[in-house]
Image 1 (cartoon, rainbow, N blue to C red):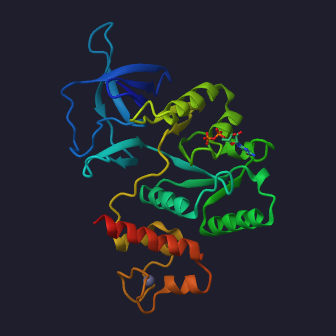
Image 2: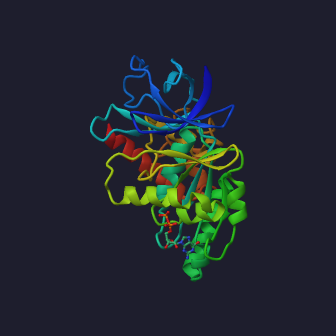
Image 3: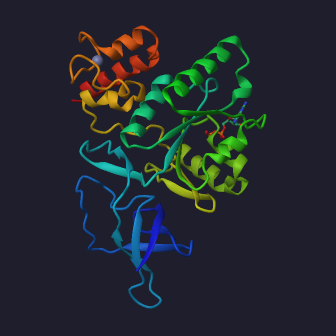
Length: 309
Ligand code: GDP
Ligand code: ZN
């Protein structure tokens, strides 16, 4: 048997990349394949490592086994709340592309994304694109705040402009030797940035996002593209947010690194950092160590989670 990872899944067949030969193979899944987790609607996701074989000479490749996942991101099925769709697995990191203007990415969106990435233990870099546009005083201040807020917490933040060719080399270096999920609102310049570092992907990236935008597809497939040897990006057309899965109220602050750092210091061990006495998180917000926007988004996610129950 040979080992490969899945780069594309259509539901009936799969594109695999063999880990030894680096060759791409089309494969099917054995019909008798057992689904371990009944709630998951797709047995195999992009990024999965599998063992495959050629059962008969000249026959098509068959996936025999799925190897355990290091991590994975899911999307809840909109129809059946208890059903989950695995979007991608075995990610080394995520890159979130944001803009301050044209369009503006909200801090709420950024924090929700970071919380879900933290909950999946996927390190995230924030790329602020279109910095050529932020010339007004208001936008300059928003840019400075954004950088300060997230670098202070410990996130890697880089600034780019595809039109002025700023930060493109730094952007390129993010990906080396890794499997990276690239996300961001439509219009932030995801395709422009990827094309700036890998023009050959041009057609594929563009055609895929156009396809999704026109709504011909109701299902969106993740797909993995090779940027350079051992370097892959995972594009998830139509997926702007990662679902925040099953986070308990008391657990949510663990996914805010600046709150996680204060873990165990509040008076109550199960402190939710709202009204409790001697809450060090609340104190840190009051004296400015934790930005108000982060705390407000923390409360907002808590409220969402409560509404869902
Ligand atoms: P996507 O939807 O995220 O893939 O975004 P696109 O790459 O299609 O870019 C959306 C629009 O923003 C296009 O008109 C791009 O030319 C423009 N754009 C992309 N990057 C930049 C940038 O750094 N500065 C400016 N001013 N415009 C940009
Ligand atoms: Zn507290």
